[in-house]
Length: 226
Image (cartoon, rainbow, N blue to C red; front, side, top):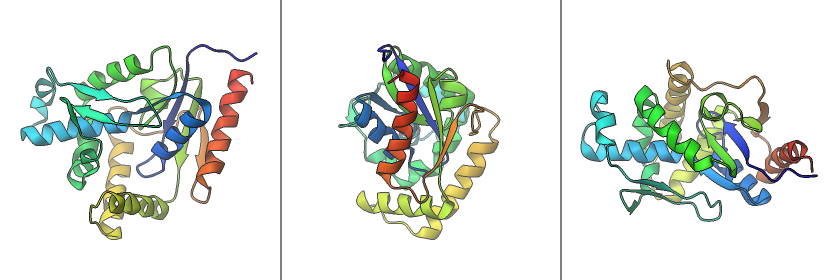
């Protein structure tokens, strides 16, 4: 018999590993909700950039007082709004790319965000993806996945994403940015990127999207008893 209660699938992994693609595809396949926590950090980074305080971490938390951050959990129609404005595409800019790791490493920002992420996932059957989903935000998730891919493949995917958004970039720029983010995310003192001991690892460097979704879906069904 399949358990019909809440069920969290938590997906971690480095920048450009394809967490969003897997999470949305898996949510659609299973009829689950979907939460892109990275998009939430990107939106807050955009807010701080617009306020001109990106270089003043001591002011960040105060700047979030009264901020309205709304995020869709519908995998078929993802959007994120900042103070009522749809910023779904704007959060993918190179400027946000440059600062999002620093913003997301700030302890007070992480605590502020963690509360909201848990509220969004409460009692839902949901797929959540980010950098510390399995180790910090949802340490008791029913299924934990660490998604990885080669540096070259991650850079290729990011370049394609930027092209689709009409943002110009070079492969060298992207590789440099990903290397920086990998190093920063894995060595930061607060909630560093790491693989949870009980997470399954999926390396999708050579996998099709359909194949990685199938692997993850089978793991979910095992745990649901279906």
